[in-house]
Length: 337
Image 1 (cartoon, rainbow, N blue to C red):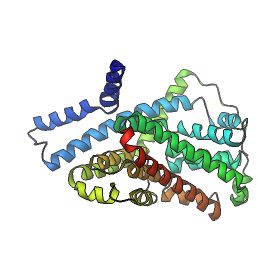
Image 2 (image 1 turned 180 degrees about the vertical axis):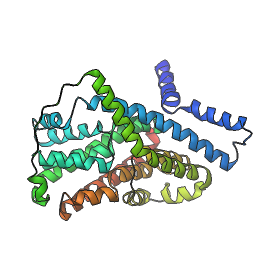
Image 3 (image 1 turned 90 degrees about the vertical axis):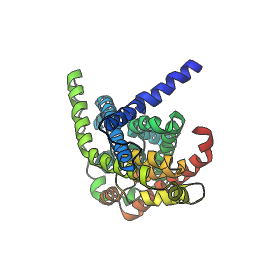
């Protein structure tokens, strides 16, 4: 068991966390005659290290996930989902969302397509919630910073929110609150073409490059914010707002995150910096969930497909679920970190 623990620590610290890269960047800056204990140089080290780390993990993960996704185009996914009913269909849709590397805005067109194709509304909402909130990328990136226990629990609770949210919407029979053009849009039922291995590799490469182009600006912004927090924001400030001394830190973090737009790759460096400054784990993860799941651009896009009452229900389900997840993590923080 001790050997397994050492191997896992190596994987988490050196392969996923890339601590060697941080040391390498520090040595390189030192070789240039820069003092790495200086705040400006420390910020530069954090920025360079985190950008490289996240880009490497991002490209590797998106390529792998996209290759898997090539076996499940929308037509095949719809065919699989129609075989299930009730909570099992919602659970399967939520799991499907974990292998789609989409932000909240990118998930909406697929949600609209599934709804137009006649899938139950609860099933499509389970997909819509889980797709941006939890994915394989978030699992690996969270493991690199918070460890396996936190990462697995984050994904599990995210899936619970997606399944419960979709099931609740299904039970409330909210179909009348979907815009008519969505329900009458129909779909073309085409069989997925037979792809060669080379076709799948080309598809994965294109998906990786397309996703990279979309999220790279947010990575730069997120890492820059993380560098400022890491080296310039006093720990006392973070502790007062998001630490244990503020029982409403989770609620505040969620409300701050809701109107923002980003994805897991842009919020990771902010989360890492906040954790190092003493923010509570639940507040950090609630902020991440709120940013990735509920953003003003995605809400505006979603309003084109559903009516205000259903939109408000969707926002309420996600917000309440995210806040509950935050408090659960705060309660468990001592035992999982």
